[in-house]
Amino acid sequence: DQETRQRALEPFYTTKAQGTGLGLAYAARVIEIHGGEMSFRENHPKGTIFEIRLECSL
Image 1 (cartoon, rainbow, N blue to C red):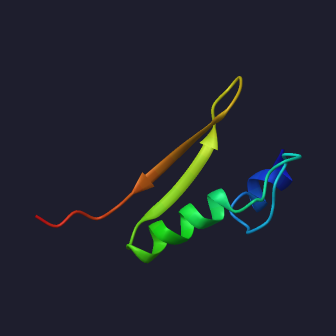
Image 2 (image 1 turned 90 degrees about the vertical axis):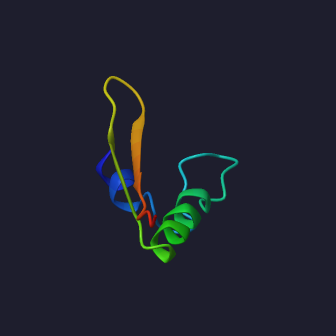
C-alpha cells in the first residue's frame, strides 16, 4: 500500500509481527555511505523489486 511504500526505508518501520524494521533502513544507509542508490518498485502480482546502484572504480 501507499504508506508502506513511503515508509519502507524508515528505521523501525515494519509490517511483520516479528520484524525489527531495521533491515532495509540499514541496507539503504550502507549503500548511501558508499555513494550508491537504492530504489524499489512493485512486482505485480506480488512482491517487490529492489535495485541497487554502486559506483565502480577500475
